[in-house]
Image (cartoon, rainbow, N blue to C red):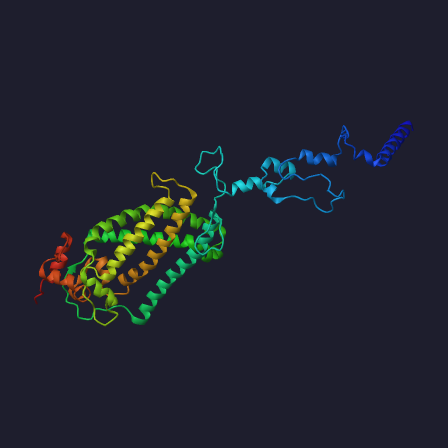
Length: 411
């Protein structure tokens, strides 16, 4: 009971003190002497002092002496100037200053010994066709998965459709005259080995690359995420190891066939007539015609070298390069564009070298062509063979085959 009586007395004393403060003369507030500050400030008045800093809320009363209604007035320009320590005091849990520094793309301190470890998020970038800039990683992802894959896929499908239409509408190119039975060695065993090395590695790279690029749209709904994940992992490993083999074979092909693919005057007429499609007469051609030379310099050399170099960069096997995220994104775009173009162009080459032209596949499989085939498709080269400027037999193992075909048969 004594304890309760003591608490009641304290409450009455506090109430009396509050009433006397409210009835104090108004002149005390207007006196020139500064009133003494209380020993302990109320919690409401202490909070702004503790949170003082740029942009902190002001507690001064309005000029008219009234009470400000609604939310406190905060100038956003001051908030944007706050550092993280000031923001933590004013608005605990608000990490905006930190993230403003992060999205700037500048490099800060990191104890990790890796390139760009201090850059959490790349600065903003904007690729072709994008409405507004976003962080560079997101801009690259949208560009690769959007326009690049869509356009590259449609180009590849269009090339396949064109070859199919050419086969079913026009049909394969047949030899018009009767076969003579005399043979010319068009490709030596070494040339055929180089060609098939390039062809086989290219097909492996094309199949694995198409699966990694478009498999998630076509195969993953059928195979499921787990099986498709293992498949793409295996194909990526194969892709990375076959790439250098393709590069070596490609270099050997460029060195071996560059001389016979040098431009000639007859190539202009061949290209203008589209290989005889315009005018109905097969134009003159040397060992390789104008179309094959375009494929060699544009597809094999230009696009093939671009695909190879960009692939080496993506595999990080080019010495002396600073492998930043921006560099890898750029070369990924180069690799995808070059690969899309060379795959589409290769469809025409594969079609003409297999089912599209009679005798073309045998030339690369066995190395020999009939005199009539050479006369119709590469007449300038055939004339050189007849005159003896170009040997009919170019390898030792072809001597018996070609000699037996050329020697007249007696009954």
